[in-house]
Image (cartoon, rainbow over all chains, first blue to last red; front, side):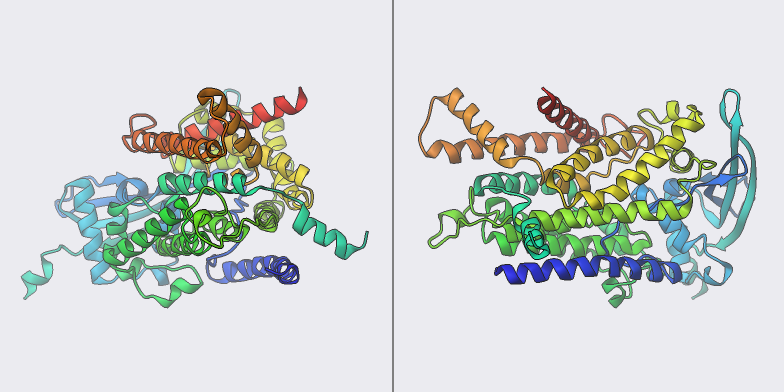
Length: 168
Length: 360
């Protein structure tokens, strides 16, 4: 490759890198982080609340029709096939969204049923998606959890795999 | 010296690697990707994604939006197979430039599909390294290409500068949002907050995590916040000096090691890129000296044989480590893997060894 071409590549890259970073910022703000992009994770959150920390934790509760106490699972326990690094993002995108985006097709409800049965070995009927906020503060012997509040809870009615056949 | 001359010097003279050094780098990189950095977790992971309903297809803005749902398991297997073939060809140095680019593109496609669950992992360097290094002529030695007629032994140094630029800039993008997010505010201990998040939410509780959760020194955590931001921002400036860039890469190893010990995040893909900046000529020469001392052979053939022997040993070690790691014998409660821990300890050892040698 000619040195003139290589220089041109470098100049293009040196212009492109900050431009694409700007695009990542804008698109990421309004939608979600674009890909592929030459960026590393910012981890910009500081999780600080007054003089302590607030940490959000999602749970999935599996309910049966028999009214037994629900089985409470961490998202990574409900979706064990997903790499742990992707679980919070998966939850945020599909389950911890605002009300208008919580639409699940029958196909998705069937799939969630299957997943719930596979993980809990129960005849699941409902899923509760729960988001809690844990507050930690400094104590003489280290950090301790002070309190927990429930930030979000909604229910997904699952569809049994056999249900469509029964209705037919 | 004019600005143009300085620019040229930076591009073309910052780094210098011989055909033999690049050949070794190519082989070790291909083995590293093959055993540890292929995107996804194999067939069961691909089948899981292929079975996901379209509701859960959330591609990041970009080319993956052209599709409406996850591809079938057969498509995953096709891309995976193309990746394996191109990676093997890159390892053997067959049509190295083409197969290195194909390796990078296949990795990108697999990553794109996997990231369409709604979460992008920042592992693009795994694809960038083979694509950028394809232009260095890293197939000039210890390769099938090198025994073909009319082969070119001329190597290029500028891809290393380009790769350094990518790493430096990407590090900057990790540091800059932290400033905006309040990491430098003395009333916030962001690193400690992230530790708690990883520890409680993601249950990353292996290594020193539990000890660090109880380590409640505001000064210590604030210092870590500042060091992290300065290190990540400073990486970009270091791109313009090979000496400083190597120092930052060495510090990056310490940084990732401490992150692994506390947050249980290893970020192994970065090590593929960091490894490019090792002194590969020095590694080649040392290995050759050792081979000659052990075998007593001095001829021209010993050059190739020493490199092939080293590659075979590394390949065998990687294979064994891969098998051991997949057996899940240790770190069962953690999402850290055995090979990540081994590599980070090894990288720490290498950095300390180089540091001690420089100081002595």
